Length: 200
Image 1 (spheres, rainbow, N blue to C red):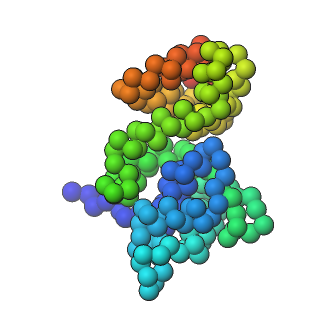
Image 2 (tube, rainbow, N blue to C red; image 1 turned 90 degrees about the vertical axis):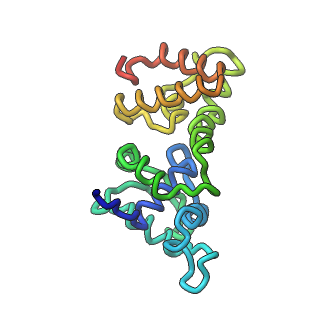
């Protein structure tokens, strides 16, 4: 049996950013450090106190993840890396599409993210997005822009159609499973308005 390679600090930091909504917003270094510590305490803790998160370890992992030789998975804005605001790049999204299942299996602990919470997170990205909220208010996606539709699926307008379509189908399945008719109506409306984005 092939041995599963343990996640690197870069793996954990990028995955932590993803779980914190780094496809839609920029996230502070310290917030990522807390999530990374939650996912892998021994990798992201003080040497003398494994119960305390180490922001410097997270900063170094994010700094590496920003470099091309490590994949250029993240970008940063801010006065310094320690006070930086980070977001996933297209390369980071593509890498996560290939590695999310592996990382979820290795880093998900029952006390931090049960399977039902993962599904809830997927749906929450849509339910909390301004595009969906506008649709619920107006019953129309006429005012919704293509980038807003993509962001509501935790993607961007530059995401490959096959990737966007896979995310779209995943959210549709979860919405049906959760009997979220409002989300299904939103997805149907967006599918009709943006067929080229889904390569339909």
